[in-house]
Length: 185
Image 1 (cartoon, one colour):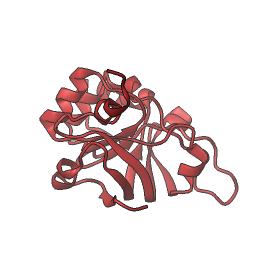
Image 2 (cartoon, helix red, strand yellow):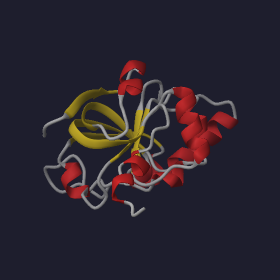
Image 3 (cartoon, helix red, strand yellow):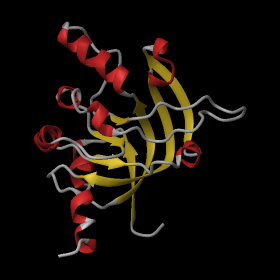
Image 4 (cartoon, helix red, strand yellow):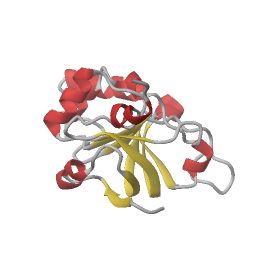
């Protein structure tokens, strides 16, 4: 892959703010897996004044509910979940230090405003490529809410995990700018 940025997760503020809409990245390090059921529990815990079971400071969350692992693999298919399902919870988690998100699809305007306020990018993984993406996940460890099964909060050790920056920390949206040259006038 040419013109690709190699970055480490968790993200520090400089990394998060340096990513631009349209950038292709390969992520190595630890990302957090969590879907809507886990997001709901995290936000409810905060509303009750409880400490979160996972530190979100600098964390990158991948919206995924993986399938069971085949023998010899860390994880089964691990394709992205539609990010809009997490929109109700995202601003609250961004305020907890969340530094990046990976999913697919559009985000609501209030989420984009919260991303700009906290300097956080949203990246997309390729939908329908879960089996290929899973090859980049080297270790899967449940951290919280194991009763949620594949929707539990888990740590994913990744190596060269491919993604594209869709909305950067300034609010620039590649879903809009990337499509613009192909629209009829």
